[in-house]
Length: 303
Image (cartoon, rainbow, N blue to C red):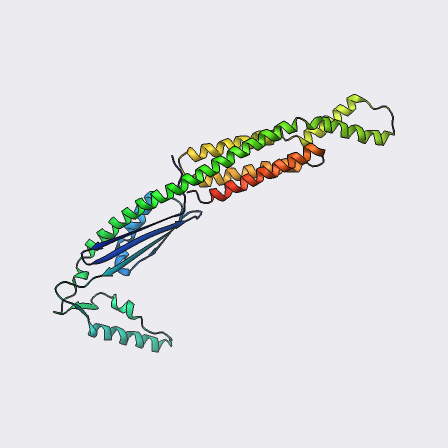
């Protein structure tokens, strides 16, 4: 199942019988699904249906939906302001502002959107108030088109993220292989280091080779990174598997990256004081952490 990015954008504009409708959807990354709507009050009734439609296709992300509707004039005449209603509204506004000591001015745009504020020349309300159902249907249709466009956008972005993460996971596996090869060369260094140390302490006295081997084995066990390397490679393989699995890949990948980072830190803590092999292992361990960080940067946008 292809992954989707949480980042996307879509806009649909269409001319309808009584105006021009534009609906846009913008998404960015977020831990959960966070829906925000910005649209005229006349579309409030259709908001629940819009929410349901988006939830069917989007499971994570900050989603911003904007609806713009520009009405055109009526073919049978022009509309005028219901001045009686407007005066009543203004009087009520000023009365409340005066009684409560509010320093505020009336919003004419808000007043003109009130039901009945605009009327046709013959005294009837304009057709805009009689075809709400048709406008709502157009809004839902535009939303369906925008959601489909958004999904294609997110799939394209997801394909790029998928390619990048798989490349980083392959690089991580290569680093693990190189560290494992160097690890095998570290034991002789342990033995020589311990022999030199004991030689200094005993001032040239005979040293039991068996004791040297035992101490070297203890030191090797404390500095052995074989288990961490195995787990790190396993996690890199799991990364590829997650990208092909269903469900909320981003959340699962975030947890896996925490485990990968923990293994890399443990490797770095065990490679100090091992001479030349240790320095090389440290460099490779830092490179592994860098790859993990790059995977994390990409994973933040995965749904």
